[in-house]
Image 1 (tube, rainbow, N blue to C red):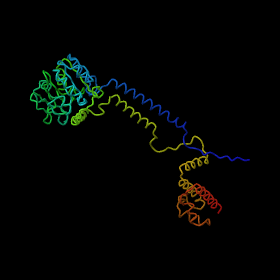
Image 2: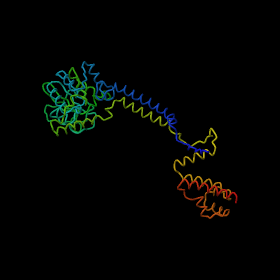
Image 3: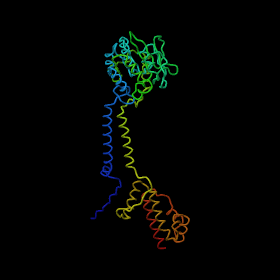
Image 4: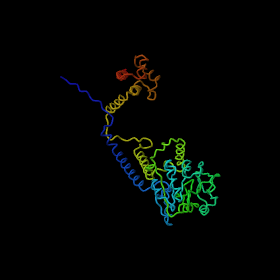
Length: 416
């Protein structure tokens, strides 16, 4: 009994082992870069702070002015919650609120109640309509204007001594005759000093730029900052945060739709001075940039060479039968009968043309080749035309039949 052996088709697809061998180097490099970037970003983010933070040495931080105040004997206390800020408020204290628009309505009302009775000074940085109405009653916030170097144009001693300073931003109006307005831009002031209680006052500022490290040594910014923040022996630097436990009070309990709308407008005004990127620690931005650069370099490293292809000698000799078999398997896998038929017909025409006395340049010209073939064999012209220049077969069986017919035609031409 004879057992027929069926040859298994040869697969040209890479195996799992080959894929892993090729990819493991790239994956290892990417993993190292990701770990290094995250570690670097985490380390950097642990020592960097946000805008107007007295501990930040970044361009938009305020460490420089805080150090100058400390050198003049002013104590600087950083508060990150409303309870910390109100507990430190008193007649000998200046309270700087860097983000009044981040406070909820109930936080703003609680803060106003405390500062009104403190007889101290309160500075509000760029409050919007809602925050201004609650923290500085009698003052109205107007549309934002470009920040630039402005002259005081008022009788406030601190402003006159400082002279030109970087102000502008949100502008304000007030009908209070006791208020002092300074640094007008487009006809509206960007600094308002409003008396509150006994010997206390509230200073509304349209922009924080004059407090930034990168701007402190320009114009009269340093002088204005030191006089406004150093009028009392103690300074409470309040950095409002959305994570403050006091911010969890339900603002919808009162059902006042107008108040909710005003609060939404106030929070939107915070975007005038800060963007989303400003809220991200610089360490994470640098880490992302480094990862992006590493990805580009990895892509360039693994990319194909640019320029024309260069022919090289094969390291080993490959038999023609193996090459033909591999190519045929690729055609079969792609179901490309048309390309396979074209290859068979083109090869047959190339071999038959010299036998029929046709130059190689005319081997694929139907009129020339078919005329020469008709003179050597007795097959009808339409049969030769279909065989040598016909359409692609629709089945594998038809493709095999075409190959057999081309072989038979070549043998007939050779013997004729």
